Image (cartoon, rainbow, N blue to C red):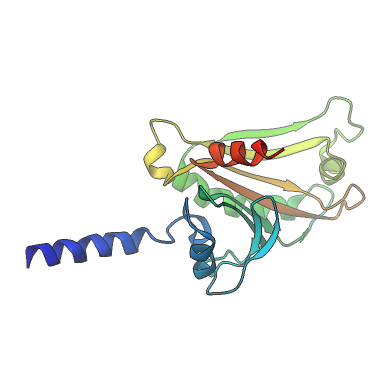
Length: 198
């Protein structure tokens, strides 16, 4: 009887951990596991371990999801891309949406490294040209988290998390999108294996 209870306890703990990662996805998931996390919807192969997916556990702001799945390592990288957000020249609206995403990420993963800089040679130094600078690629607006020995446990197998703002093209200065990327602990070896085929 004790053995049976132990088995049920382990299964219960395992069920809590399944699909506990970003968008319900965990490190090492197979293509079949990811398909299940997408409610059975088929994944769409892109190339080089990459697949378009639509997870059941999705965020209302995000409309595009790409995962990297290796035959040997399983799931090792996730990227989410938001819908385009209409914004004024200061980027006010997209910054507000970004702040809404940043708050829960900060609560969950702690302090982050902020990169908010503009190239010295950009013609768009003034804040009223914020969106134009993002569009032309002279402004970088990104936040990063990195797991280390002090916080590795709360990262749940993740080693890096990054989030930032971009536009679809240099001529689009009134709409931007937010991207978010999650790298798991197995990403280094998976990317190395991918590079080995070149």
